[in-house]
Length: 316
Ligand SMILES: [Zn+2]
Image 1: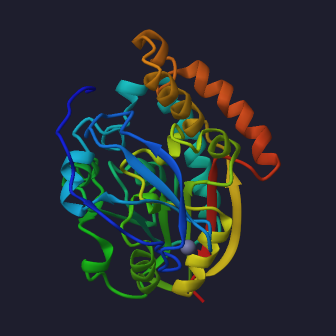
Image 2: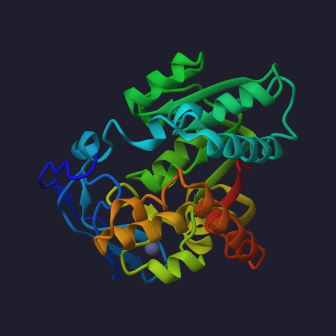
């Protein structure tokens, strides 16, 4: 997996996707510490107006197949490979998902945008009401194929070009998806048009107003996920984006996650060229570090500084 350098990527210069402005300062520099898909060094900028953190320059869309290698974890988070971590995460995520679904009607239609291998839809299928209709969207054919293998209905492509019927869905989910997008406002607008009036969109994404960001923002922060996370939000930039698209913010808070803590330390140790046995203590398979940082983030979350942001938006 590591050391599979594919050389240089095509990079494009961009501006803040919320303000459409260039008024930003560099805040972090790093490389693809996790998958080594490219030998490039990447730069994170922060918009002086809204606080959005964005990769600039970033790979153009032609680089997708390179930056999302077949070993990419979102494509195969399985019980077989992740054991107890899979079990705990599944239970926790199912509880969260059902809390967002509690006011839905019997015949609700739910759309997971960026459904990956269908992890969240499968949890809804298992723990939710059997009368719900579940559908997913993912631009990656490999991910969509894995989701379809478990019997889910998945639309392959990007939602703004799929021509899904308008005013159809009661709930849309974007769980750790928005940070991967080239044009978040266009995707949000497309989601808004397929939602019914009063329908809700739940967004979960990395929080740039967190302790882990503050400590590691110069380069090792796990949330950068260089070069795959293109737009990273705080409460201000996410609220501004929602308003730009015409969503109402019903709820916006932080959510507990150990993942960015674990990856930040992993990236730091990798850059110090520490041995593999040590860096392996800080991955999604390391139960000890996941437990320690979950406990820490539970405390931080109580102070509104959890590692993830969770927004519930509504189509008025
Ligand atoms: Zn901005």
